[in-house]
Length: 112
Ligand SMILES: [Zn+2]
Image: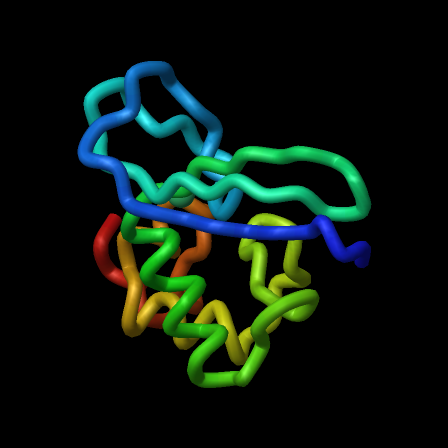
């Protein structure tokens, strides 16, 4: 960290270009709302676009676990662990689907 580091984010109504969501790795379609963040870390400027649903899930997870700052969750890079994938399935099913997280086999049995 250096004294010039900063991070700020806001929600935009519609992206003008397609962006890859930093949380789920899927594309955010042009015209979709998104969470946009920009900042500088160790001298490197960066921008991020995240689906609004993915942002909501990540901030809810950080709130629950106190994982802010360097511990902030980035779902696509986290180890698949039943604790958080189960929570995500229950509370943020749209995001779970984007991450290809599925329920345990026995819960979907009989659908085929
Ligand atoms: Zn996303």
